[in-house]
Length: 322
Image (cartoon, rainbow, N blue to C red; front, side, top):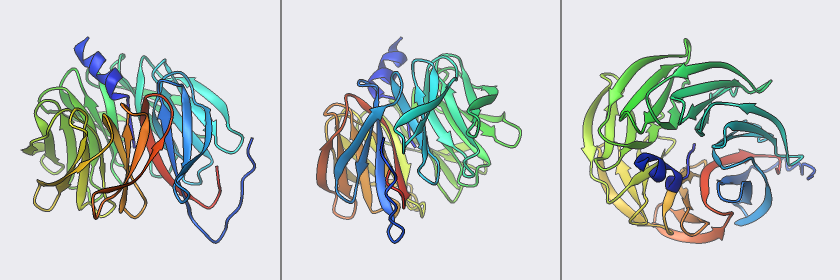
């Protein structure tokens, strides 16, 4: 998932490693983009430590990886998208996406990535095989955060300046619905069961969109500026970071209520889950660290330092060490 540096977003609102084959085990890795140090930190979560730091581009944010863990695609706010070979530790291709590339998601078949261009009111669609743009799709003003439905049918874009969500149909690569959402929408996540889309909306709270009617059916209160969001694989719980109060909201989707709050590090901007949905990895921009949180207890297991101003994060499970 997911997305842009929250400090940058707030400002804009206002104006050679060989693969080690381990065929009998699945290894979990966390990849964190660091906007302030222009690099990508890779953490081995089984050992709970940083194993690699590589150059990612200028002001990297949104990130997605191919299913085999070989390549990462990174949106660089300076204007490009980098394709990084995680084995050779090199940027192997770069494409100019638009003005202010911010959020990035990959289609389930890994053929394309969709990138929000915050300052050119568009979403670029990039062919992952040859790293070329196939189309640019006009959306609202200030597109930033982005997510895709599990079946790959729809891409959801939060437009932070025009205060709306654009729904892109991937078959036609056109906007088929525009949904007003209040003020300054940021993080966005679609539940895997395709029932809801949750939007972090400052200062309104968390807006819940029903995907059958394309209407907001509920607004949940947030403590402060809600930003990064994620959802469990079974669609049961949605998690949203509160930037100013240093915590995470836990939303039960069966009742559409906030049922718990979990303390994090300083200025949590993004959140990702382990494959089983039992562990959360919270990106704390204010303390340049990742908080590893056991979701059953709400306890922080470990805090791991990363680069300067971490912004984007993705978790990958692979049998090959990057």
